[in-house]
Image (cartoon, rainbow, N blue to C red; front, side, top):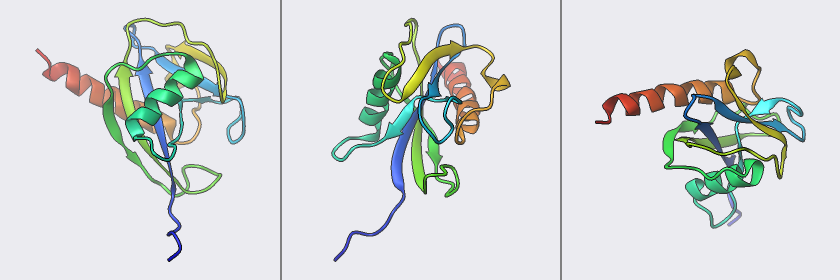
Amino acid sequence: MPAPQTPRLTTDCAVFDAAGRLLLIRRKHEPFRDRYALPGGFVEIGETVEDACRRELREETGIAAGPLTLVGVYSDPGRDPRGHTCTVAFATRVETGEPVAGDDAAEAEWVADWRQHPLAFDHALIAEDAVRIMAQRQSRSP
């Protein structure tokens, strides 16, 4: 029996520092070349989405993820012009770290005014959801 055709699985990570800045990359390749995006990418066979998130973050920015918080699953068939993808998005906070662009990232930087920039894919929605979820978690912690 042939394998069913399904969407490709990706992961994205909204990383915030102590100042509330968002870690963004500038995409090196199409689609959305040179546009800001969250670090992320395709999940490899045999890899959990959490491990893929940590790997992609490290490969694209040199930053190690703190504890991951699930933001959500984003599955709009039109979210990626290359074809139907579903992403499992996470958020994390890190205290320090100077990002260094690598892999598919032309640049990696902390961006304070990220809402003023158009983000690739549906990453603005993911980032806004991450802000809300991280604020809810912080208000519940002792």
